Length: 320
Ligand code: APR
Image (cartoon, rainbow, N blue to C red):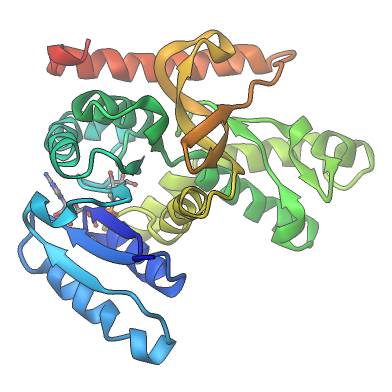
């Protein structure tokens, strides 16, 4: 059986890390694409030369022409501009929307059967636009946000409790960004919900709320520290987990920005929900009952994503 082909559209900081991780995990051969000449070729060559040392077999190449992604099984999209300090994800909207139009056309022409994972921000609006521009089936186009947001939440919780990150699970819903909805009653340490851990005295309500807020601001915290760009190790690792679940038909249950068809009372939009990712792409959206202020928080998040979609449609009326 021939190796799978993974196309990385955008070969910047996240793109390079994606290529490295996909190589180390031997997920397939890798084509790095970028408009910057030399960048994808240089990174591909550098990572290929780590192969003999690390002991992985993967062919890596770079391309500045979309023909290079022909027949890709998975496309991971990071093309665009990242956040600079003081810039919100939404500031990126106008620039990155144009990039999504080009990327969508390239994927439609050369890799129409691929599973497409979008990372470019503002995520929920960009993945929605990318699906429309590419015309690929909605179950084959998905956004990476929830795995990263829950990874941040799990890291902070594991540190707070002094337990292994492996034993902490987190459940997040909604858009990527300030309105993300972490569900504490479905987030656990070895199956014990955070709400019970509060009762057990492991953590105060106030401290938990602090951690929730730090998770919401997780991207901005890193932008503020790096000063010249945004996070890339954890975003890349998160997208690779999604790609691996598709390629190996693992049917992992992962929070992703998925196209809703009436679930959670929403349709014709992308927002973060728990999904089963397998060989068919997004095979199922898991709909849980929201209680108390969860529903209001989710609606606030949906409204914020819809605001971004409206802003996109004002720039590109063919999206409406
Ligand atoms: N087509 C292809 N590649 C493009 C295009 C385009 N039209 N426009 C820009 N790029 C490339 C840039 O040349 C650059 O190499 O996209 C790459 C982006 O890489 P970085 O600037 O290093 O950004 P990165 O940190 O990888 O983040 C990429 O993911 O998390 C989001 O907010 C982040 O939107 C940003 C994206």
